[in-house]
Amino acid sequence: MSRDRWQWSLQQIDAPRAWRITTGDPGVTVAVLDTGVDPRHPDLQGKVLRGLNLCEPQRSSNDDNGHGTAVSGIIAGQGGFRDGFRGVAPDCRILPIKVNRPRSGNVRAPQIAEGIRKALALGADVLNLSVGCDVGEPEFTHETMAQLASAIYEALRRGVPVVCAAGPKERKTYPATWETLPEFAGLIAVGASDRRDRPYFWSPRWEYVSLLAPAGATTIFPTGHPIHYGRFGGTSAASPHVAGVLALMRTLRPELKPKELKRILLESCDPLYGGRWRRVNAFRALEALGGRKALIGSEQLHKSRKNPAPALQ
Image (cartoon, rainbow, N blue to C red):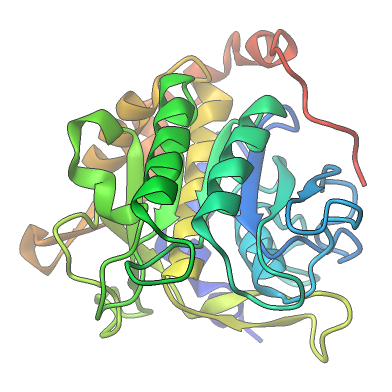
């Protein structure tokens, strides 16, 4: 299979040119709040940190659904184009925070809020939430909504950008809905684009959608799945493309605040439909940060990080 067909989404966001500047750093950790991650997959081996399982604390954070592993592959898969799946930030690491109900993809606001706080305590540099809640769902009350908002605000206050899937087209999803509020200036809600650089028909058009990123692209699935590689869609797939770009940006400029990273990310996007929509561009984002020149001194900054992430699985 040709390179363009195998991982077209990376070509679309200009990731190969971005890798000429940096492929990330093992000191940069992306927390994946999801269904867990399979650390045994060949394209994730040696880069998945020992995470947490919030619904079953006595069990590991291994994936029992496949969703979290697919998200993690898009962020930091370490294979090549021909012999495996390469993610957007292949030299960064993944911190799995398993928030789903056992053996299902269902999540609840209290677990997401707790997961954010745990990820911060473990030193995450970027948070990816390819999960969300809708009004009317069980356990999504005014109280738990406030807990979730408080956790996201704390992440942004502590300098950690939060990327989330903007949800389906037909209903508003939290936390994405809060993206337009001033106190959530570093929150990034991601919609989905297709292979022809058009907004997917099921991607939301709400005012809070910051930008678009590819969906329906190839990614990885857990080792127990019938296939190791396959298509993965929805804004759940779009969000980790942006989280991976932010991991590359934090490699170059770890001192930048979430709202500064978001501003640069949006300003460096490729305009679609006459500027009505914006699609993330990894190379232009890194170039806006100074490109190779920004690498000077960044290594020392990563070595001086506090609250190092836990051991590898």
